[in-house]
Amino acid sequence: MRILFVRPAPPPDTIGLQHIMIVEPLELEVLAALVGTDDTCMIADMILEKKPLEKILEDFRPDLFCVTGYITHMDTIRNFCRMAKSILPDVHTVTGGVHVEKFPEDIDDPAVDFRVVRNATRAFPKLIAHLKNNAPRPLEILAPGEKLDEKLLPPFDFYFPIPRRDLTMKYRRGYFYVFHNRVALVKTSFGCPYTCRFCYCRKITNDQYFARPMEEVIAELKGIREKEIYIVDDDFLLSPTRLLTFISRVKQENIKKKYLVFGRADFIAEHAELIKELHEVGLRTVIVGIESFNDDELDSFEKRTTREINEKALKVLKENHVDCYAAVITSPDWSKDDFRKAGDKLVEMGIQFVNLQPLTPLKGTGIEVPDEELVIRREDYPKWDLAHVVIRPKHMTIKEYYEQVLKLYERIVFQPKNLLYHALHHPLSIQWKLAKGIIRIRKQYRDRIEHSSETYAQDTLHTADSI
Image 1 (tube, rainbow, N blue to C red):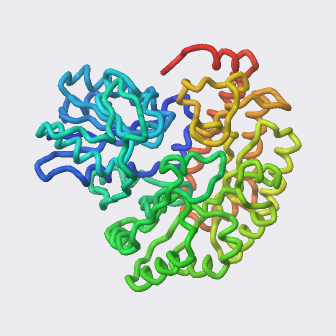
Image 2: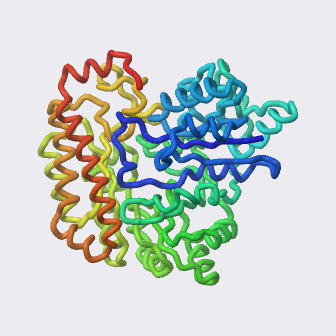
Image 3: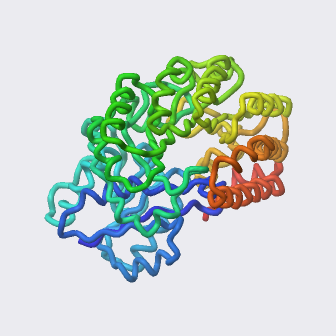
């Protein structure tokens, strides 16, 4: 069987963080590791691929067409499957991803033969057997028109093989994450035991948490060529015992790599010595969900942290020479003064890179907003990117809100001391790549500012335009 795996590029209407971060399609590399020895596989990363998808389909002529993505890709995935069917009428199409698993109805279409809604690493080989040998179709995969009923699904199974990174070899020089150039992804756990209301991650696994055996993780690390590793766990800094095992095994195996990880502020604040030990074996950067500088907001998010904890965590990171990429949620309740105060605090804490996320009530999270308060339709998938303003601001126009977001970004990114730090610590090549990306994102925000108005918001909400 010839199997084509496709990772789509973000749609034009999506504010493109891919301009400052492009990482390998790990989920497709994992699925490719599960095919039979008699199968022929290809991965097409359409973010970096120069050849049009039509040409790839005509040249490779797959029997099975697999495409994955996020909520922003729903229209693109549907259109890709239609394209595949138009070129190859007998091709089978399958899609999945974190949004499809929970809301498969959003991609239900005659051109989409199969939708994976759970346990992809177990279901995918069964699907191949179904297509090859007429074996039963796995319960974790829906056909067109079928509805998701989680009561009928088998229990979660987090089996995770070593990814087929060889299939993305032609693209790997282009993978980077902010200042981490030629970065590889590693996943050591699934889910998150915390219950932050805004977060979709824990919903994917129905609040279950599973950690891979550390020996599997170490074996995978030893086989990766790249020196920069992005550990994409929802929260890598979770278990002190597991982290001490990680540190010990990395030292024993003499693994020399640099790590970028997600971590909570409260863990960092409480484990300064452990952060020091992690830095000694390569911890370079932690992405920290600061979320807010207001304790009432943090309580409303069920974050279980405080402003004081956030400040202590950043102090611990700074003392141990670990960079912090801060994630901050901007509330529709914010005034211009709130944006100014947030900027003051970010500058005071020495934050060098920030990701500002307008509060986004993704389906499945604990944030519920009446449709009349939304300025983007739920079916306008490309704009549900955690960068667009989705909820109508209460103290300014949509245009003014975008202006405040961009102003805050620029205040942090173009801080003279931050620019000097980057000039002294990062190669010129990655600085240039990042500068070009920032210019592109800034242009996207300027476009939103120029075209945003109350009229625009209503048109966006009530028209059925799609790409």
